[in-house]
Image (cartoon, rainbow, N blue to C red; front, side):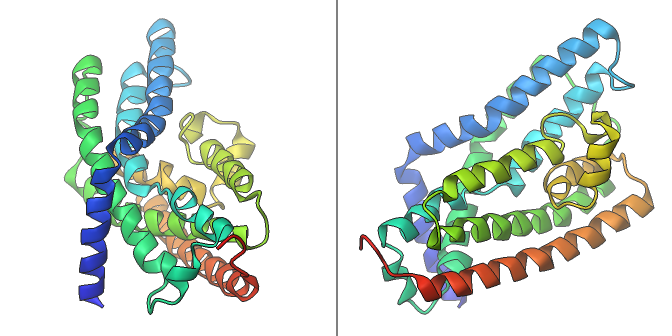
Length: 265
């Protein structure tokens, strides 16, 4: 199996380099919104002094860390796999002795992620010198706690996206469904604005959903903003949602493949 994974990595890594323009477009797509939020909120905080206790530096450090966490935990499975179900090209992958989404699709996403992180670094460095954030509150302990949290977040997010993508077995509107899913992430993950600045009802709902685990929780871990109880609660919720995501994906995939007819193949 390790040899298979190694070969898949070589193939997907080479494939990602062949689509550099596409890679650049995806990178810009991921970076534009957080950078706009960074510019807007820091400007507001500079004018007012603070926004409900958040200073300009608080917003700067939050979004600078968010840029990194978002790259680690996001995925593009809807764009790399959805069309295969719709045009019938999935047929060739189903006859292979490996799971299309849990092997090749997963490795493809990781290869893509490795390249986008490489592209993010120079942009992040430029932002660092432009905004000059004070990262004195960040500790190695927080970073060490955030790494496994981001790994859990990536696999949870990947399985949820893969399950939604697999709805293409039933409907051609799967991209619209995934856009709605992405809108929920934007609202409840703290990407648009730190969750503590959202209405209380949104905060209460967010703590039971997986979306804040994808971005807000690892960002707060890195920034050292969580108590010991909140850290434990976050990890417990991460494992619970990973299990739920696995069961959801397994059910959708198993039932979807049964009705797959390779229309268009």
